[in-house]
Image 1: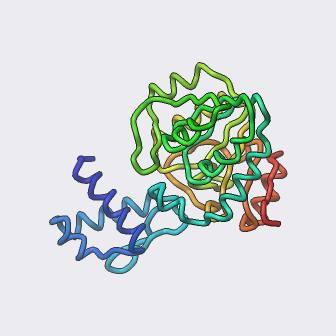
Image 2: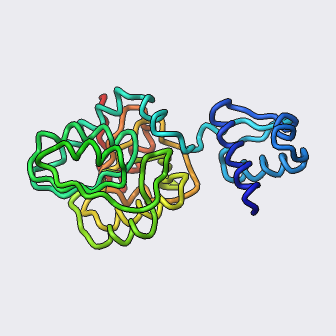
Amino acid sequence: MSTDTVKRRECIMDMLCQEGSVRVDALSKQFNVSSVTIRNDLRYLEKKGCALRSYGGAMVNHKFAFDRPLQVKGRMDREIKTRIAKKAAEFVHDGDSLIIDSGSTTAEIVPFLKQHRDLVVMTNALNIAYELAGFDSVDVMVLGGHVRKNSYSLYGPAAEQQLSQYRFDTLFLGVDGFDLEAGITTPNSGEAHLNRVMCDVAHQIIAVADGTKFGRKSFCLIREARLIHRLITDSRIPLHYRQALTAFGVEVIVVDE
């Protein structure tokens, strides 16, 4: 696949996310390519799960977990994310070693850690590291690598190798898509690789996810849903998700019941 094709399809994905639908004729003019090429693009995006083709164009598939900028994510469901984060922080004890994954919900955990003493926190998120740096009683470790500007996060082989040298008590894992069959997924393959290493080096995995994430799927698997230890979420979690996860042995905590 050529670089031009990749960039065009990424642009179309952004337009779907922002506008909700696209038209073949308009895209053909915008990118100066044939309508056949655009239809092939839409067919590819439909196969990947992010678009639903319609007559003359395509619509966004709202069950797909798009890679939205962190600033946009942070404005969505802010109150419920704060409640999830506050509950997550209750599982932190003085002297713990933690990994805090990048994300809008995981970032909300940080203010609730200020009361703790002698914490070691490793993160791949620049915004989280910056805030933690102001806490006297937290030893902050930052993974090195390439920067994803959408999420202010770092990823790559260097980060994976660095992380693999350590062992941590708890991982707070951010979620883009959470599906019982597809598992916990994210749009970026590099971040998914790093997240998998995070899971491998943590004694317990606590996923933090608001109710909009359920039933959504993306390209890259992080972890099977049954392999996390605890899920902190809100009352929008479907009942059959809750029942299935409980049967798997996953503790499900609903913050607004």
